[in-house]
Length: 161
View (tube, helix red, strand yellow):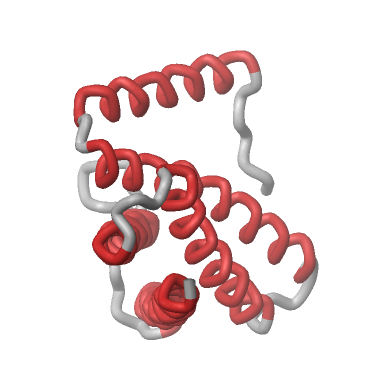
């Protein structure tokens, strides 16, 4: 169990450092990185974060599976979620030093929404690594996408100003 805790702490700290570096590259240093990937509606910052989280989750969850292959899918998903929660919570604390108002709102909003998103991402990665059933994984992703589309149809999302 101690090795699992050390894996979580090391991965959370590494992810936090990477998050701060990416934030600095996009918002602090004048590197003129475009906001959107050219000819797409995809934001560059979000794409980098997604690649970072997927990479870290794959590496860490493979390491956890290698140390204990009998670990359940739920526990494997929770390991990724805990790593994401700790790194995101401390990253939001770091970001709150840059905000001037509504620090608690931005902290809670960022931590909760990212943790939920990372839990879903962690589930997909843990499912693939544990079961190696790609067809079922694709059906789960399509099901999630369709259910989100239906929810968005009935409850349209409009970002806050």
